[in-house]
Image (cartoon, rainbow, N blue to C red; front, side, top):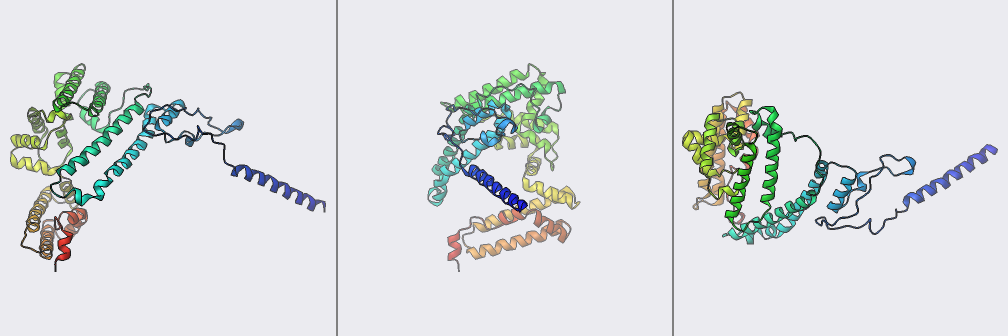
Length: 409
């Protein structure tokens, strides 16, 4: 009997304790008006930052969790991260995605009218509508850059060694002695920072903008000549050219000496309009320089090698263990069919069903031709699989008019 009484008393006591714990867990924590404040994320008003929290739950303290710092006020979030000792680079890694998501949503919201009224706004002539969209996107981009400058401009400088170059910069510097790399990277990083600041500046005239970028290039040249010889600087500038991308592209026969000459010719024909953009070479200047150095046929082959569709063909022929020339043959066959489809699509004497039938015949003819080039059915199937997106979007009826299709017999 005594054992039964003890068991009942123990169960009753446990029930009371459980009820007390549940009551305590269910009651909401006390939140002050200041703690619940939500400010405009783009405001730079200083909010009281959270205090550094202990990392363990000993001595009755609450264990630290990142949610204690998170707030929709980015400036308060930044201040809280600074107070607990986060490095500036970590703070950027945390906050930059939040800012990017906010402005992506803002961009979609502001451009919604252009989407909802697409057919009304983009009915030809649509130059004004395109300019309106471009202006709105630029306004949002400037607003985002200005916010990032205010958000991160006050961060304390980090005491660290020189930044390691990224893969692209490392390839550009691989001809220099390694002890020069940190100083070159430091100057290139400072140059990029000045470029970002200039990009967010509104200039009175296009000439003022061109001069600002020209001054930045001259400043970079002066800084690099402090540590590099003129020959080293010349090669570095060649490697930093947008055209230097051809060093890493397969499928063409342009050697490095020819590439450097193409870059020099393109740079020598820069116009004041080109000077408004740093490290920019217009497609027209690029083509003229290539044709001057390589001739029109080789220039065409180099520019073809840059096309993603051709690179896909090149990888496909490598998998099939076929020579590179087969990729060129397939490319030319595809281009010929593309031209033929364009002619069919602009033939006003054809109905839409007739256009569709002719395009289907052209596609089937191309597939048979490719099968012969790639050694049989396996080659054709590999081609169709590798380029299925291109086949569905490029080799079809362009300028499809749904109203015309519905009205066709």
